[in-house]
Length: 285
Image 1 (cartoon, rainbow, N blue to C red):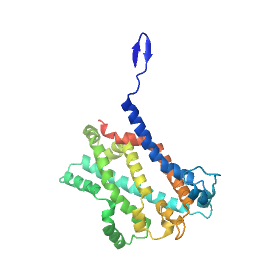
Image 2 (image 1 turned 135 degrees about the vertical axis):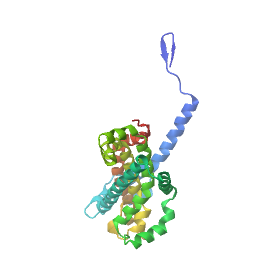
Image 3 (image 1 turned 60 degrees about the vertical axis):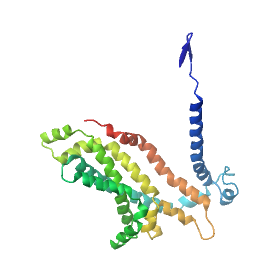
Image 4 (image 1 turned 180 degrees about the vertical axis):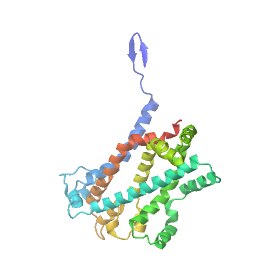
């Protein structure tokens, strides 16, 4: 702002600022358009959707939502499977990655750096490159066709990033706190339970969000492991509305809308903890 003769004047935005705003608005609308199409598509009949896919429903109808959520609907089975798999995956990853992070950051032993780099190398291999050996291993362990086969596979592929996050965070916790705990007679387990665990709440929230999103949207692993439609997760459940000669696009869009709502609610509820977790490296003892 500039003050001239007692009058306060607002500084005009530059043309560069207007250009950035216009470009940001364009990309925001571009990203929102598919979401808008899905949201309104669930309130249309199949005929309306095919004749006017981008216009507003005329009239609005809940027929697709009744078909999905009603007594004859199968959404709740898919929802339960997704929640079950995501919950156990999150639990296993948190327990294993926190234990590994504590050991790699607070316990001195030979080969610690080599072991840490070994875990980090797991971040370099995408799931698609390991599909065949993964399937053969799960089949050898008799885990194909089970939810726990998906859980263990997802746990394995989420561990490298989670260990990296927890190890980096635990390294920032002052060694003075550990020394003080040792003077009071507490060992590494006491230090981890009473000091490190309470301090790591933001990081736990961050890792939970990352794993939940990946598990909720995972398509390839459940498709590879599960062979019974009763065990299908939400991404696989969408295929149930596609037939040999026709596809219920309006029901698919209603299905997608309902499946996104729990994730959106959970993310916005935990958003402040995620921000804290991403900046948790600034913790000082």
